[in-house]
Image 1 (cartoon, rainbow, N blue to C red):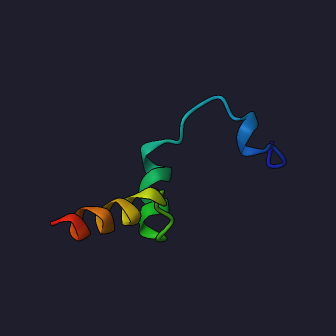
Image 2 (image 1 turned 135 degrees about the horizontal axis):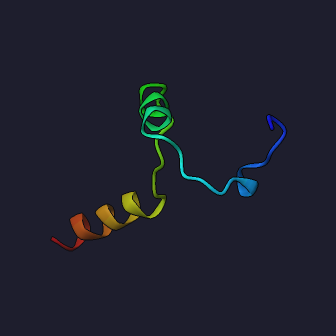
Length: 44
């Protein structure tokens, strides 16, 4: 079971695992957000 890829998983992560990932600094981030913020700031 430890050799499963992330794509093979069919259940979402538990709240405990999500909280542990956040504490470890592993947060999902969009690469588009900083670019969008710069465009908005540049247009203002």
